[in-house]
Length: 146
Length: 494
Image 1 (tube, each protein chain N blue to C red):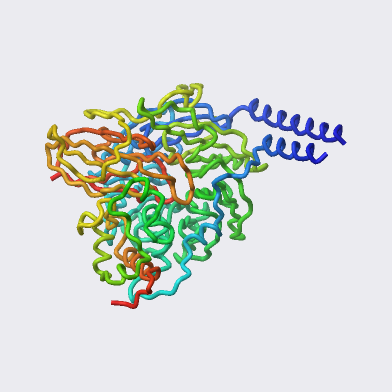
Image 2 (spheres, each protein chain N blue to C red):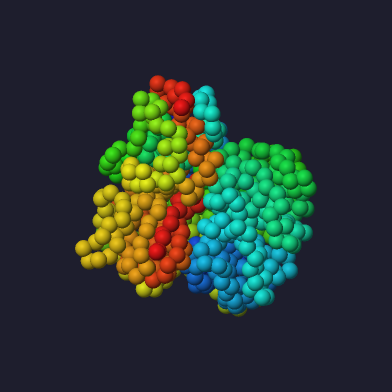
């Protein structure tokens, strides 16, 4: 009987097209992915808004957690590899103005990776500062300001 | 027990067959007009039958349409043109040239059809254009960069409302005099519409997964209603009672009770909707679904003998009363918007049944090219950049991934032979997890020389002469995901 019940379930599911979407993401799941849970550390910019843009534009190369291991990075054989933004030893030494320049002008503009595009075309200056404010919150050891 | 289950099963099959045949037998009482995006066409079809009635070749990258009841108005994002199409014979009766580089993405029309208002996404400008005199007045938004991508007009015609994703704001522009008068912050604004009573502007906020109610009298946000993941377009029914919002990453359409400002229902679509429209009787909702993974995977043959699989987008009809999907077909191009009219209101003898949008084994339909060599090669795995090729051409090895081009600033000189080798290096489109995303590549101002699809596994090679100085925006011309519009770059010809 269980077998018949199961078959009936599958059949009606198929017939009426109530197939669960394999790719659907709920509003809450989306908001969870872009939610900022850290503590602001930079004087300038809004890290919560920065995380939204980081999730949209940066994770494909830099990874969801910013560890430099996004899905495209290895496939495209990027050399140098995308920067590990959680590497506080490196990131904390970088001045915010220099980060602003590389995000705005792209890697080629500052002799860094040719894969890094110039975001100044689609992100406002305020949004770039928001991104930097977010980057400052994911470094370990933590960023203490410069 | 087995007999009982068999009987239930039989009844279920019977009821399904009855309801299906009912839909098939029912005459399609509406006609849909869609801008086909990269196929350069206006596509005309029956609703709910989704039978193609006519295709009208207009340009390169067609967005819109909107209507005043007599004409349709579309914009060509690649060629900076407004085209006016006579509804009585579905043919272009006039083209109006916008300024170079304007990069129009959407259009609104005044009730009397005398003026159109256009959001110039690529230039950061918003324009008012007189349909009779062709006179254009443009507002250059500040600060730059600005990206006005969707536009709506209030029922009294006094204001246009524009979403600008770069600066996370909605702008209110008075139509007479044509000037910016207010703006309000909205995170990641996308589609925008106005309720028929003029009380609210409804705006999709991608980053807050919400529908924003803007009280137009005071121009203040009255409510932020959480709806779905990556909300995009919004339509309102004829009575102004319910709004419908497409959720790109949730693969559903959300029904919203406007008076109560709460979610009233959800319809699943397959998959990842973009534009939606509603029939004049509020019975059918048309969803342009941007991905057909698992539904129409092998419909097109590969884009070249080197490979390159493109899955067509699809259109789905939802019967609003029952919430059921009653028809779904593969479509060509990248639908940007759809106007739905009753069959009786259209006196066009040229509309005849022309079969399906997409034929099995065919190739994706792209607007015709001029003065360009296009081919596909095996995927180029060399690093991106600009190089001098041995044959004297300037070779630009461009990578496309969700949601950027790299490099996205390219410099050449006038007279150079420019060869773009463009490779889609995506693994998946973020937030929608699609393995088969195909980007597009079009250069505004060089639309007839570019406008190619970029499926994974191959590189598109596009070669043309840079015969005019200027700054030209290139952009992704095939919908690829939540921040598809932001996927842009610049070609500078010195």
